[in-house]
Image (cartoon, rainbow, N blue to C red; front, side, top):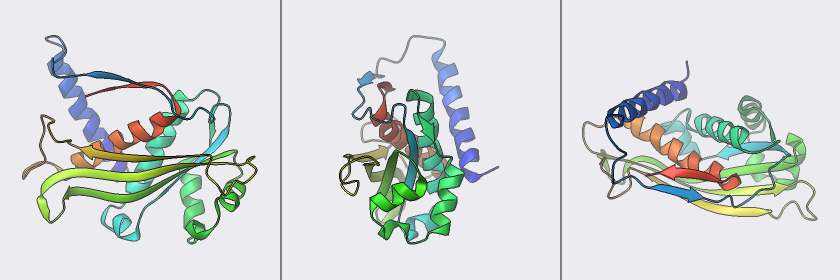
Length: 210
């Protein structure tokens, strides 16, 4: 079983414990349900590949993170976008491995190689699990641009849409605070899930609970 799956399993177990605790009473007064509208709807009824990039340094220090984010993005898009057909994460990751300089190529070449109508490029600029300069204070951060390449555009090398996503877990003011004794793997997987909730959520209406 992959490290990502182990982390997801751990997150689900913790989430289940929280839900069971809450069953004895009403939803916590501090929780808020937020309706979020889709910002890009042209993945509907399209063939799509999700490609995640991150620095060699981040990949070395967080093995499996790129695969985990790709898999979670694909899972959420597949479950929520009508008529979408997605290239499997394993196929995309193998393509990245076989083409180590893919990131230097123009978007039009990438979308042609992957043979899809839409390419979702998730370019991660910052990825960390603790505060800068203090490895004992755990707080996950993922900052990325989410860019969409459209195969039929007059100029596919210009993105059809581009969004910035900045995710932090826990956020300042949340009940949980990263500190000595917290589980870094749990912090990491919850940050990934929160990032994917926001990034994949660009493509469909959804609700978030905070």
